[in-house]
Length: 268
Image (cartoon, rainbow, N blue to C red; front, side, top):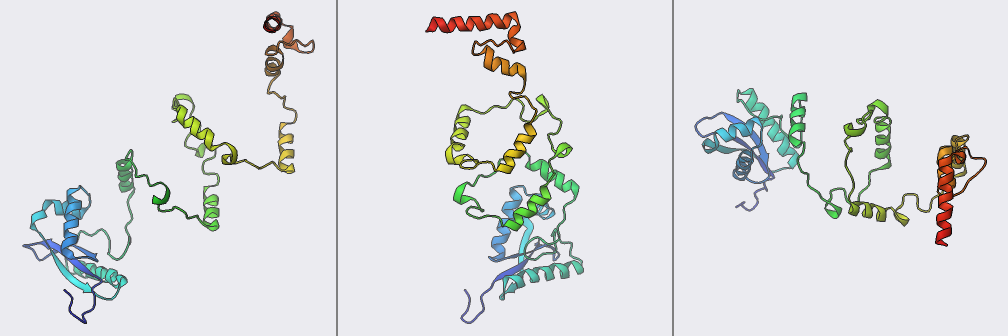
């Protein structure tokens, strides 16, 4: 218990070593107690966390002790500086610390090699994520600034165009979406989301300039896309024959049109 007038302890810097050896192998900081922090370290080691320190701790678990090196009563920033000072001093004194960084609050100077990045990528591939929808999401109700959005837009412009697209030139069975189909329930939900005000173009209309551009782009292009398509839609399917249509002159098409007309007459 803290004595009256004694300043509150913000945190402690601790050192972990073997009980029979004076050399420290790890230095850390905690805002709880050193003993509780060592208990957490042991739990992480049993869970299989892979770092030089945890590999060493798994090997010497029952032989390990923890010492309080310094109590900090000023601020968290001073706590981080104290840890950095202890790490530097112990390394200079010949202690073979297993710390990956020089200490302090937050990541300070750890740069992964390409091999480490690739190993981490392989470990995380296929790992199920944690879904935090709605108010559980850390970014719920927030919005990126216009400056940030503009910077992302500039950085990403053209990154997935042509050969830079990861699916460029991949067709059929080579495409990652090949053979995948949406369930009826998913189709229904997507349809409901896109109706009315859910449609991104709801209540919007193209400007005169946009309409002019669309018209110029389609000028000279047959609508429908081919005369054969137009013949099927407006003649064959309706049982109509036109002397000006080259496709209506074929015997098969003519017979098919007469059959449709006869079918309509039978129905009426």
